[in-house]
Image (cartoon, rainbow, N blue to C red; front, side, top):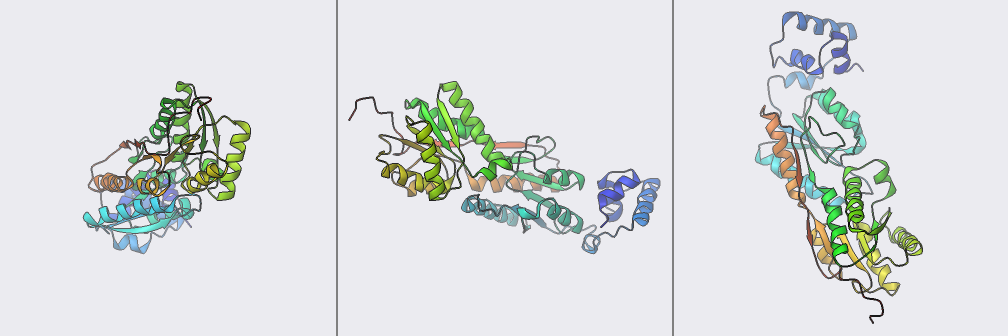
Amino acid sequence: MVTLAQVAEVAGVSSSTVSYVLSGKRVISPPTRERVERAIEALGYHPNAGARALAGKRSHIIALVVPLRTDVYVPVMMEIALAVTMAARQHGYDVLLLTNDEGPAGLRRVAGSGLAEGVILMDVQLDDPRIAVLRETDSQAALIGLPADPSGLACVDHDFARAGALCAEHLAELGHREVAFIGYAPAVYRRHSGYAERTIAGFQEAARQRGLRVVHRPCEGTFESTAGALARILADRPDTTGFVVQNEGAIGPLLSLLRSSGRVVPEDASVVALCPEQLAEQHYPRLTAVTGPAQELGDRAVELLMSQLDSRPNEEVALLQPVLTARESSGPVRSPGTP
């Protein structure tokens, strides 16, 4: 199928110029219009009928790409999606849900249909291939996540590097020197998910500055995988007294495994989690946790997108600051010989 981008290449113009020729939203010089029309005819390009019907109108629909994976914590993703939906309704917009498995092709399909005025991407990777499609199709977009190169993009995210640093700093202040980081499944790191890689990078840098010895173990989040990760940690670093957990599924198994191994939390082992407040409060002991407002991510993403749709270009990177709340799962290192 011939794409709008191919028409633009043959005509020697940008994709947005082809869009304007088709929609009539902007005045295009006669010579340029003729080149585009000749390219359309030569390639046999057929713009989507829905897009033609919407020319000159606004659909008042935005597309939201949500991650439906087994290795993400679905409750948080759904909280963000709900926040986007509610914020969009306040602006008179409805939300079209896409799943991340559609990838770049799904974005291309939505951009070609003209159904959605803009798009919000979640679960952004450092080298996310969908960003090239957004630029190629001249789509209005906001990202919930931070790619390696955010130039020219509107992004909002938690400051995950700072979140990781807070964990290391907290344990260092309590006197811990051997610390383990139990992270997400290996697949999360293989696809370079920004939230995972930035957290571990921030943690490792703060640990280096504080003189901590650290080990990072990815984990699927099941009881068996958590048991395997803990066994490897204790085999390699038997003096480990501090544990940081970013995988929500591994929190319960880790606490259970520490108890069954005779390690009392927090007297023998301190646990710090990166998780929502409500999850931290559900466990015993209640978890010291680093949290960030999921709802605000959705609200800010909609505001960034609305600014663009109102012809107010917005190239902004907004990082929401995390908060560490100390609870009963972390404490000072027990001195040698202390009963």
